[in-house]
Length: 194
Image (tube, rainbow, N blue to C red; front, side, top):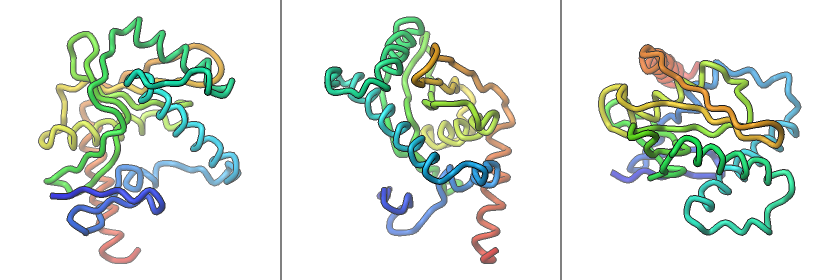
């Protein structure tokens, strides 16, 4: 099995067949229509930059002097989070595919925190609220390849230019079931071109 991600189209394929992404499945729960497209694009670019900064920092390859000023508070908060939580990363920006349910995505961080397997999604805001829990449940199940990944701790980590970091746990055991319901609707709509 070969999982491929096309960054230009944000499309996942497995052995050449397009599969839905976690983001696509959850899209009906987001309403960005009141946010200007240029504002959304800046937010997206900043999010990508923060993710890349974390990856480089964990690998010991971060050039701090080359960072723009707006990223320095996010870096300080990232390092404070690691020091206070003991989080040890084992995978970053890791592509996952669920062999049973046929969806794909890219989880931000996987590692261990206080000896527990942990998936963390890094956010600049918690505007998505409980939908983040669905996202993390989908990544968790795909990462482990079966079941609902219930043994994995799921968190969103807010890192932005202002204020301290915030770690939000997601513990609702029904999250994966809700995600699967949305996946069924997504596939139904695709099948019938709705």
